[in-house]
Image (spheres, rainbow, N blue to C red):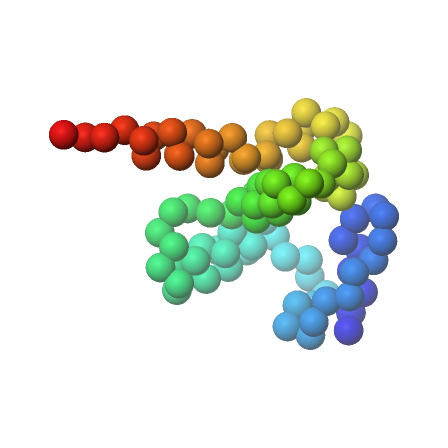
Amino acid sequence: MPQLLHSPLQPVSLPAIFAQLSNRPMTQADAYRMIRRRSVEVSILTKIGDHSFRATGITEYLRNGGKLEIAQQTAAHESARTTGFYDRRNDQVSLDEIERIDLI
């Protein structure tokens, strides 16, 4: 399996499906097109991108008791404030509260 640097802390082994197919790095536009194409294939119509995955990973890590400082290190952010922008735990609270509205 190829070794890729996941974070400044440790390398991560990835399955062959993620193997590099060329010597050319993937551009941001290429990555967005790939994510968009795959999301449409599975009927996700909301526009998502690489930051959607980052937000999900950070949010779930924190929701499961992870520490903001560790999430910050893993995401290679200089500031915990930047990492905090990806924390979506309060979004669920807002959705839960909105669902309490009883329309007559």
